[in-house]
Image (cartoon, rainbow, N blue to C red):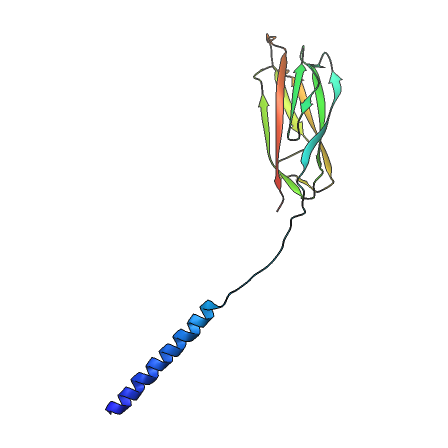
Length: 166
Protein backbone atom coordinates (compact mmCIF):
# COMPACT_ATOMS: atom_id res chain seq x y z
CA UNK A 1 0.00 0.00 0.00
CA UNK A 2 2.87 2.35 0.79
CA UNK A 3 4.45 1.64 -2.53
CA UNK A 4 1.21 2.40 -4.32
CA UNK A 5 0.88 5.77 -2.53
CA UNK A 6 4.50 6.59 -3.31
CA UNK A 7 3.98 5.78 -7.01
CA UNK A 8 0.85 7.92 -7.07
CA UNK A 9 2.63 10.84 -5.41
CA UNK A 10 5.56 10.59 -7.85
CA UNK A 11 3.18 10.37 -10.83
CA UNK A 12 1.21 13.44 -9.68
CA UNK A 13 4.48 15.31 -9.06
CA UNK A 14 5.76 14.45 -12.55
CA UNK A 15 2.44 15.58 -14.09
CA UNK A 16 2.63 18.89 -12.24
CA UNK A 17 6.25 19.39 -13.36
CA UNK A 18 5.31 18.57 -16.94
CA UNK A 19 2.41 21.07 -16.85
CA UNK A 20 4.67 23.77 -15.41
CA UNK A 21 7.27 23.15 -18.13
CA UNK A 22 4.63 23.44 -20.89
CA UNK A 23 3.20 26.62 -19.33
CA UNK A 24 6.68 28.15 -19.03
CA UNK A 25 7.46 27.30 -22.66
CA UNK A 26 4.15 28.84 -23.78
CA UNK A 27 4.84 32.09 -21.93
CA UNK A 28 8.41 32.26 -23.24
CA UNK A 29 7.25 32.22 -26.86
CA UNK A 30 7.63 35.64 -28.45
CA UNK A 31 4.46 36.89 -30.11
CA UNK A 32 4.83 39.45 -32.90
CA UNK A 33 1.78 41.22 -34.31
CA UNK A 34 2.33 43.61 -37.19
CA UNK A 35 -0.26 45.74 -38.93
CA UNK A 36 -0.82 49.00 -40.73
CA UNK A 37 -3.88 51.21 -40.91
CA UNK A 38 -4.69 54.63 -42.24
CA UNK A 39 -7.63 57.03 -42.15
CA UNK A 40 -8.44 58.77 -45.38
CA UNK A 41 -11.54 60.68 -44.32
CA UNK A 42 -11.85 64.45 -44.32
CA UNK A 43 -14.11 66.60 -42.10
CA UNK A 44 -15.05 69.91 -43.72
CA UNK A 45 -18.57 71.16 -43.02
CA UNK A 46 -18.74 74.92 -43.34
CA UNK A 47 -20.85 77.96 -44.12
CA UNK A 48 -19.94 78.93 -47.67
CA UNK A 49 -22.25 81.83 -48.55
CA UNK A 50 -24.65 84.43 -47.12
CA UNK A 51 -26.95 86.54 -49.30
CA UNK A 52 -29.32 89.36 -48.25
CA UNK A 53 -32.64 89.32 -50.07
CA UNK A 54 -36.32 90.25 -49.76
CA UNK A 55 -35.62 93.62 -48.14
CA UNK A 56 -38.98 95.07 -47.06
CA UNK A 57 -39.61 98.71 -46.05
CA UNK A 58 -36.70 100.63 -44.55
CA UNK A 59 -34.74 97.53 -43.51
CA UNK A 60 -31.00 97.66 -44.22
CA UNK A 61 -27.79 95.84 -43.47
CA UNK A 62 -25.63 97.58 -40.91
CA UNK A 63 -22.58 96.17 -42.68
CA UNK A 64 -22.36 93.00 -44.70
CA UNK A 65 -23.00 89.68 -42.93
CA UNK A 66 -19.79 88.14 -41.64
CA UNK A 67 -19.31 84.38 -41.63
CA UNK A 68 -16.76 81.80 -40.57
CA UNK A 69 -16.91 78.06 -41.25
CA UNK A 70 -19.29 77.49 -38.31
CA UNK A 71 -21.04 80.81 -37.57
CA UNK A 72 -22.62 83.80 -39.28
CA UNK A 73 -23.33 87.25 -37.83
CA UNK A 74 -25.98 89.65 -39.14
CA UNK A 75 -26.23 93.34 -38.23
CA UNK A 76 -29.54 94.82 -39.28
CA UNK A 77 -31.26 98.19 -38.94
CA UNK A 78 -35.06 98.29 -38.94
CA UNK A 79 -37.04 101.56 -38.73
CA UNK A 80 -40.70 100.65 -38.27
CA UNK A 81 -43.23 97.80 -38.07
CA UNK A 82 -43.34 95.85 -41.30
CA UNK A 83 -39.59 96.19 -41.98
CA UNK A 84 -37.80 92.91 -42.57
CA UNK A 85 -34.87 91.35 -44.35
CA UNK A 86 -34.05 87.73 -45.21
CA UNK A 87 -30.60 86.22 -45.19
CA UNK A 88 -30.09 83.00 -47.15
CA UNK A 89 -27.21 81.03 -45.67
CA UNK A 90 -25.54 78.12 -47.48
CA UNK A 91 -23.79 75.39 -45.51
CA UNK A 92 -21.77 72.82 -47.49
CA UNK A 93 -20.20 69.47 -46.63
CA UNK A 94 -16.91 69.55 -48.57
CA UNK A 95 -15.61 66.58 -46.60
CA UNK A 96 -15.95 62.83 -46.98
CA UNK A 97 -17.91 62.16 -43.78
CA UNK A 98 -21.67 62.48 -43.44
CA UNK A 99 -22.60 65.13 -40.85
CA UNK A 100 -25.62 65.68 -38.64
CA UNK A 101 -26.64 69.08 -37.21
CA UNK A 102 -26.37 68.64 -33.46
CA UNK A 103 -27.17 72.18 -32.31
CA UNK A 104 -28.19 75.61 -33.60
CA UNK A 105 -26.97 78.29 -31.20
CA UNK A 106 -28.41 81.82 -31.52
CA UNK A 107 -26.90 84.79 -29.74
CA UNK A 108 -28.77 88.05 -30.27
CA UNK A 109 -28.37 91.51 -28.83
CA UNK A 110 -31.32 92.36 -26.67
CA UNK A 111 -33.66 94.48 -28.73
CA UNK A 112 -37.34 93.80 -27.97
CA UNK A 113 -38.45 95.34 -31.27
CA UNK A 114 -36.60 92.83 -33.47
CA UNK A 115 -37.48 89.17 -34.03
CA UNK A 116 -35.31 86.49 -35.63
CA UNK A 117 -36.82 83.48 -37.37
CA UNK A 118 -34.71 80.60 -38.68
CA UNK A 119 -36.37 78.32 -41.26
CA UNK A 120 -35.42 75.44 -43.55
CA UNK A 121 -32.89 73.90 -41.15
CA UNK A 122 -33.40 71.84 -37.99
CA UNK A 123 -31.33 70.00 -35.44
CA UNK A 124 -30.98 66.42 -36.65
CA UNK A 125 -30.70 67.38 -40.35
CA UNK A 126 -28.14 65.25 -42.20
CA UNK A 127 -25.66 66.71 -44.66
CA UNK A 128 -24.00 64.07 -46.81
CA UNK A 129 -20.57 64.57 -48.42
CA UNK A 130 -20.77 66.96 -51.38
CA UNK A 131 -24.23 68.27 -50.41
CA UNK A 132 -25.23 71.84 -49.61
CA UNK A 133 -28.20 73.11 -47.64
CA UNK A 134 -29.70 76.59 -47.73
CA UNK A 135 -31.61 78.03 -44.82
CA UNK A 136 -33.18 81.41 -44.18
CA UNK A 137 -32.81 83.79 -41.28
CA UNK A 138 -35.55 86.43 -41.29
CA UNK A 139 -35.02 89.58 -39.25
CA UNK A 140 -38.24 91.52 -38.71
CA UNK A 141 -39.58 94.44 -36.74
CA UNK A 142 -42.01 93.12 -34.14
CA UNK A 143 -45.53 94.35 -35.03
CA UNK A 144 -46.55 94.12 -31.35
CA UNK A 145 -44.09 96.86 -30.32
CA UNK A 146 -46.06 100.06 -29.60
CA UNK A 147 -43.22 102.46 -28.76
CA UNK A 148 -40.16 103.14 -30.87
CA UNK A 149 -37.02 101.79 -29.15
CA UNK A 150 -33.96 104.02 -28.84
CA UNK A 151 -31.77 101.56 -30.71
CA UNK A 152 -33.04 100.53 -34.14
CA UNK A 153 -30.30 98.04 -34.94
CA UNK A 154 -29.51 94.60 -33.63
CA UNK A 155 -27.09 91.80 -34.34
CA UNK A 156 -27.52 88.06 -34.35
CA UNK A 157 -24.93 85.31 -34.47
CA UNK A 158 -26.05 81.85 -35.54
CA UNK A 159 -23.57 79.05 -34.85
CA UNK A 160 -24.04 75.58 -36.34
CA UNK A 161 -22.61 72.59 -34.48
CA UNK A 162 -22.30 69.60 -36.82
CA UNK A 163 -21.08 66.21 -35.62
CA UNK A 164 -20.16 63.02 -37.45
CA UNK A 165 -23.23 61.04 -38.50
CA UNK A 166 -23.07 57.50 -37.12
